[in-house]
Length: 495
Image (cartoon, rainbow, N blue to C red):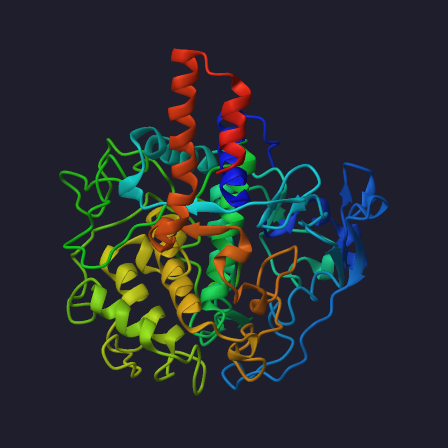
């Protein structure tokens, strides 16, 4: 039917190159005392010179409607942390984008749309890193390296708290690279609360140990992917994943992929690796009365397999993943790392992957990989310094996607109230500007413009390849026998 013809035309368009081409901490445009004192972050869209592209109908500058649902008891303070009621400490007004537009100035398209006016639906496919072609694999490593050494054009990091900035009169922001911007955001979301002096409150995390863990990392990866697409001009780029089910060891820890082991210093990467010269940051900031400011702290550390075997006896198995996927409830009980029979808590790795009962003496599934890597990946705040983080979390996200497709939960399955701070359904995720609520990412990846190669329905591939094969057959006949082109077009339209 017509679907074949559409798929064929789309395939031809891509081949012929006639389809038009189609994030975030503090937007650079808002990182100044004027914006901080006005508590407003509504930058101009260059396309028409108006805030949030208002003249073009892209969006408008509006008050942020904060969630007022009650929080869980884990954080007994109020008004001591810049991340509370994000982003109200810094900005009350931000861009609210219309239609398919998105971004801090409404200059981007939503994740599942592309094209100059954000009208073209798109679905991009994330692939297994071992199934990339040699060219794709090298390109991925080169893009990582480019991101590590390219200053972010649009965003900066905060090098001080709002109080240290004298309530906005003396801004403290720093440039950072595209890659390190995301290292910093992961750190900022998971850092301790600074209570003054040497006092900190450790039982707080805006990205882990509660229901927002999976939506937060889903958005994090989407924004990372988008920034790489912008940096490279390659709109087709997607993050690969590492399928670690039943792995015997770190099979991506080779120089061909994410870096082999140094021959004489087992905690370091082999000098032949792309990543051996990378410097990490935000690894050692807990208990300091200052924010991570992007100062280099030494090389990426990794020593896979030489970890505490009592805590993580083995890497996760297919059976672990299957049990986890069988749990019907997304979140349960206290909605933190003590939750039993919670899909989220089991996948995160605080509950047993054979019983679903919380067990803090063991690290399983997601947590197991972090512990197993025994280096930069094992420090929560700084774990994104190791590029394995991206491959690992892409696979964790694919398990989350399997669960969403299997159980088809209503939005109400994601808790609206009484979750730990930062994790209620309507809470804006820290530290993203533009603003996104947790519940917005409790939906299928297909609605966000991407799928995983191993989760695709087999029939979908056939729908595209059959007509392409038929077209090749007819074109070859045309070239050999000079069959009238209109006859071939008629065949194609009748597919």
